[in-house]
Image: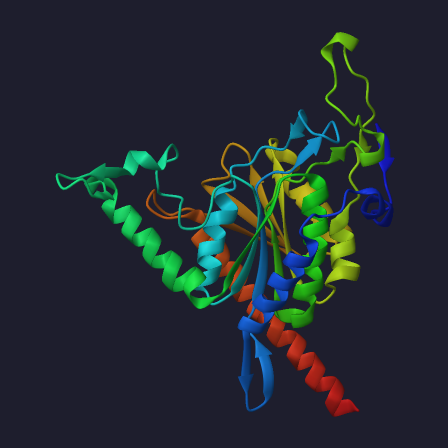
Length: 323
């Protein structure tokens, strides 16, 4: 194991995104759609980047084998729905094949399971799934894509994820304090540098492979200090030991200058989380089995983000008055 690379070195040696120009165009169009022209000029609705799902670490350049940070993406998908309901424009940066907004209550297996063919040989939604499908389509059309306030971007590898995150951060930085990052993705801590990995499939005939993993550069600090310094940043800390959970969250809060760290235990992450801020700890619990925990989380975060925006505006007004 070797130490973390410099962030710039990571990007310089990473394989370039194949569709970088298309992503830039999508981000520009998304910004334009969510700009509000008023008598006072151009304003932007609050914008959040939700990261979701796990990254992979390829072991070969022409990848056959990889190390995976598993995450279903359920929290990110659910949170995206509630951010949209709260009036946010959402950039959903997600793992290919992970859980999607408005699809959480549909069958996990083949979509054929919720379709029927009637006596007239017409395809229809099975009666047992009609309510869930109707609600999902309604929200998807009216709240998400219908209003142009949801943009989906996909990643698989750690290389794709971090390059996309940097591009999104550059875009979100244009809205200043009205931007938020909700970093729920399970990001790899270690990886094989691109120029160090095998080009072709590793052959088993050669015996057990030997490779050195490098630490992935800590991009939270770069995001906070360089890419989007005015944005409201929320990161996650998952642990299995309750004795160190809050301590580790505090460390992340201070080390990376996060506004909030959402601390959760693996055994109870679906039932409760601890919202950690400077000097405060708020435990958020799911109130009943029919409620999403994410509804309470996003409600609290939206309130804190609103106060952050108002506080920044008051500071700016005070400075102008003094000048």
